[in-house]
Length: 282
Ligand SMILES: [Zn+2]
Image (cartoon, rainbow, N blue to C red; front, side, top):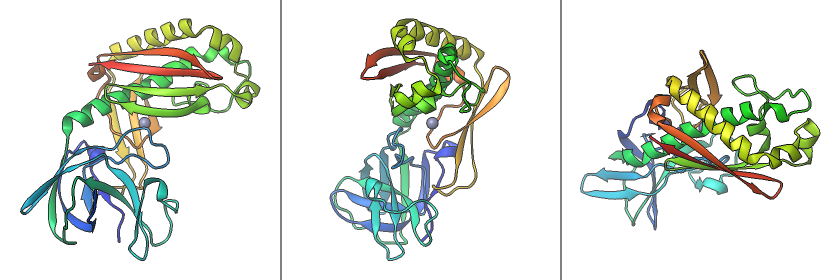
């Protein structure tokens, strides 16, 4: 069995594909050789899976949010958190699992047409593109809160607070929710946690001002990948401050900063850190 080939990185919403695995049930779990559907990552579940429909000769079904899966050398499917191996494990195929509403028997080798809900995908792409820009803006605004040199840097060469402090990230339609924790190790690395948490309202204002300035530049957003298999690395590129930035990212995105319209964040304190809520108003 081969890894699923994917086309969401190319911005595709529709593909004709061949059934390679089907487990009838509630839901039915369908795997095809090629898919335009973006699956939620089992390792860092930031962007929810695409939804849509699948149709075949004589039938049609809704596709619930897609998940990652693997098929063992013996032909057994494991989905999401049940995935027992790392990518690259000999003989295991990493696949996109389409959960279909209802019980359907689809023959291996038969053809189906997969259609992503383009509108739902677009609102998630807006939320995810906003999310990357926010991480860079947050790192910029938090530069004065570092007391020591730090080796972890983001794509703009700034101390990477976002990567070091983030606990969870969830992309939502037209927004996102991130949780940051300033624990002992981050304070040891040099983050002035007291000042940072005391000045959240000021930081919020500065992040929003930075976002507005970058959005006004309208830089291009581009995607690239090392191959078409679902396990191949994928990247986000964005032109910002006259340079092209590259960030590893498995999600979906819009084609330009100007599509985002306005992006704003709201910061609120929580246990040992803060929650960041973002809103995109295209
Ligand atoms: Zn991303």
